[in-house]
Image (cartoon, rainbow, N blue to C red; front, side, top):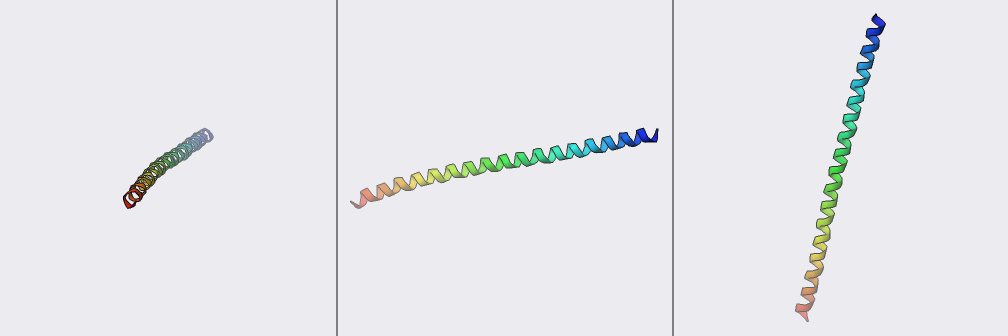
Length: 65
């Protein structure tokens, strides 16, 4: 009987550890996804600013002529 209880406790411990591992992995993937989204948003903002700089450069060149 003690062996059965020991096996049950061992199984419960393994399930808890697996749950912890899965939860940690999931949170890591969520964090990576959020980071990628932020990087993409920043890159889009950089691209937009570069386009605006090019437009301003064209306006300045026209004004100088």
